[in-house]
Image 1 (cartoon, rainbow, N blue to C red):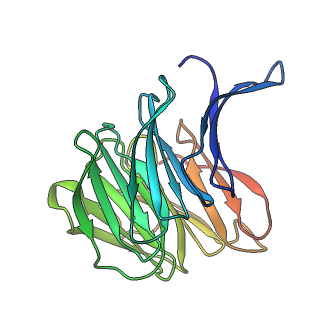
Image 2 (cartoon, rainbow, N blue to C red; image 1 turned 90 degrees about the vertical axis):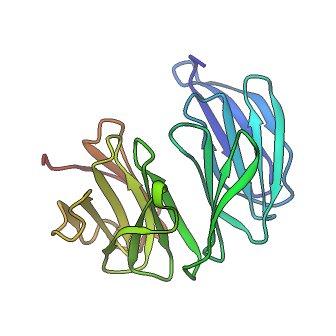
Length: 241
């Protein structure tokens, strides 16, 4: 797709793919998703943007072909789905459930290939590294972000101790930096040097409340964060390392 598209999910369980022409202020819905009966909690694009997965509070997630405008499959989980993300190769997908369970699916066979139930608490965030060898996960009740290796499923590579419950984790585009939003603070840690002091620390990124979500820009030179209580979106410059 060469046009600019956005995928939006509503509290009523509906979602839609919209064509966005910002210059002309024209917006057109290209594909409507009516699969779910309760609010949309997360969406993820397959790397080539041909497919999308949509998660819902109704404990299900669905898999769609955007080029053809059809639903390919839907899956029922035992808990609400807080997080859903495609692996960078587009062949696997990870879901994070409200009870803390993490599942990995093979998209080609539509089969669950791994399930991790070792950690308790509501799953708040999941992020793959750029090559997909590692993924980071965080739980709202924990001040620790954990990093896992897909070649050793279920085995921690390392963990990063933070100052408060972790709401957001995200690798940069190159997979060498890990961004975490914990409480009101933002931190950046270098991969393979998890125990060292953070490369970036902004203690009061959102003064009036917690960091709800934080992501690197495509270039990796900036951070964009959103606050849960203060309703601000903020942009920070990443120091050169």
